[in-house]
Amino acid sequence: MTMSKRLEIWLCVMFVCSIWAGRSLAQDSWELVVKNSGTIAMQVQLMHTNRVVMYDRTDYGASQLTFPDGYCRMNPRDIRLKKDCTAHSNVLDLATTKITPLKIFSNPWCSSGAVLADGTLLSTGGWNDGAAVIRTIGAKAGNDWKEFLKPAEGLLSARWYASDQILPDNRVIVVGGRRAFSYEFVPRKQGEGQYQLPFLKATTTPGAENNLYPFLFLNPDGNLFIMANQDAILLNYKVNRVVRTYPKIPGGPRNYPSSAGMVALPLSAEDGYKRVEVMVCGGCTPTAFLNVGKGIFETALSSCGRMVITDANAQWRMVNMPSPRVMGDMLNLPNGEVIIINGAKRGTAGWTSALLPALQPVTYDPTKNRFFTWKASTIPRMYHSSAVVLPDGKILVAGSNPHIGYDFKPKNYPYPTELRIEKYSPFYLHKSYNLRRPTILASTAFVPHNADFQVTFTLLQKPVALLFRLYAPPFTTHGYSMNQRMLVLKLKAVRTLAQNRYTATVVAPPNSVICPTGYYLLTCQNQGTPSRSVWVKIG
Image (cartoon, one colour):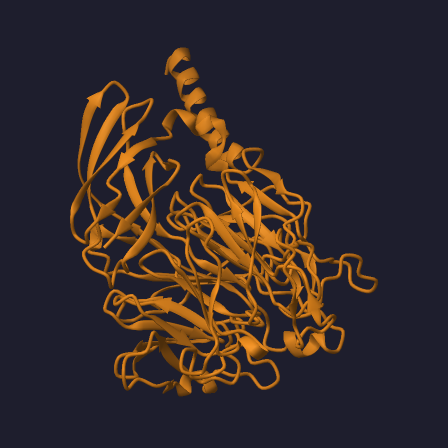
């Protein structure tokens, strides 16, 4: 072998190694974007107008955000004051970082949510006077909360720590809640009531529950995947019949207050969107919640389970995170990987129930079954924190309040109420990836199911391994991201328009079972590097 050939091989090896090494070193970053949001981001939803709606409970006492019109209200259920002149919900404009107060009055503490086809956020349940309330807010500037308080307008059962899933007919199924072993629909059809689901009662751990905020996913066959505690079923919700029971996940409980994270890995047109694999990471041992009451903070679980729920012989395949985590937010990233961010390493969810904040996010590459550990934040994000993926590929990180009320200088517990908002930039946003990063110039704004549509983009190099993804931004609270969904589209053709300018013909998903009608983030990926996303309405 000649010297020049050896040098060429050595340079190639060093280039590949530098890419992998750089990915685990200094290509990610944190930035503080809001110093004081005024209210806690306990519940968060990204809207298709690039506004982020956030809200917490209404009986915390005074927040640090007042209404510009001087509005005050009497609140007999407040634990600290009866006259409240502050907001408990706000909206963040991503373009300006301006915070605007919103008027939410019934208590949405530990509520659930979903976005409807027209972009309206639906909020269901909560605590106390909000337990059976339905709320809505539109996506446009100036929209505020509407609350449906009358029994005939609200839920049939009080639902605290329930979960929501958008359905193919643009209705929402609301599942479970504390001592609510049933489900119901919003809006209800004539004659519909609430439907008992014994699975929820059977998965209750005495003294700890561990089946709240059950994990939901709308399966391509039209049935509903439900996971609670360590068990999972497939439910035909139309006739209230369990059609399949899955193996128990090893290790310990995964639902609130053991609070693992869950995602469905991207569904793909390559197999007709038929294969669904869920992944659950973190959680606690069966004794963790009870032991916190004794002053014992057990180490959280470091295990993750992957299971192809559409396989005839579905089984959990276990992998380990680099460190233990409870209350971590688990999100699909625009490059097809998964991020786990926020949370703690010891204890459980609940008031002053966790120690050792998990400051370092980790990402997981499902194709290589490999985790990467990244740069730590300086802000602990414990109980009641949240995270959401933004159109530019960054992660908005907010919240944290492990106290019964607002407490900015706690005496006996080291984690104060947190009103700062950060953005985390994953490795793929580093400038070293710009050469292979596409930029979407235009896309069809509304696309019917199963229709071809055009995406025009620029790229500084010839396209390689192009992928187009749709992403439904979730409603996020308590470490669970409801209605999160990612789809890899069929790519029919790519045509060169001019130098560095291309148009792709892609196909929308075939129906509203696979892709519920609504707004999605569309991303173009080249050589593993995602573009900034644009909004597209499918349906």
